[in-house]
Amino acid sequence: MVHKPQYVDTIPKAISGKTRDLLKKADERGKLDEAIERLNLGAVENRNIKDLSGGELQRLAIAVASVERQTFTSSTSLPVT
Image 1 (tube, rainbow, N blue to C red):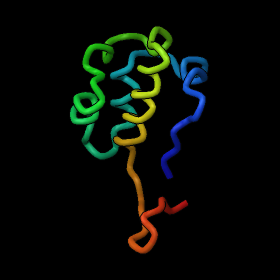
Image 2 (image 1 turned 30 degrees about the vertical axis):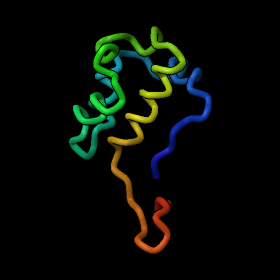
Image 3 (image 1 turned 90 degrees about the horizontal axis):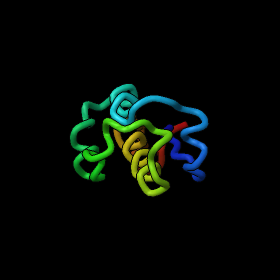
Image 4 (image 1 turned 45 degrees about the vertical axis):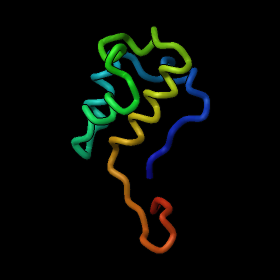
C-alpha cells in the first residue's frame, strides 16, 4: 500500500539526501523520469530534500507515491493492504 504523508514538512526530518536519489530508491515501476516531468520536479531533482519548499515537498511526496509499486483490487480500485 502506498502512503503519502499529510504533513510534508516532516519529510526532511525523516529523510535526507537529494530529491532524485529518493525517487530512484522508490522507483519500483520504472516511472522515475515520467514522474519528474509530470510533477515539474526537474528544477529541484538535484537539490537536497531539506532545501525544498512546502509545495516542492508536496510534489515530491506525490512523485514517490506514484513510482512505488501499487496493488489494486479490480472491484474497489482501493489499494490492497
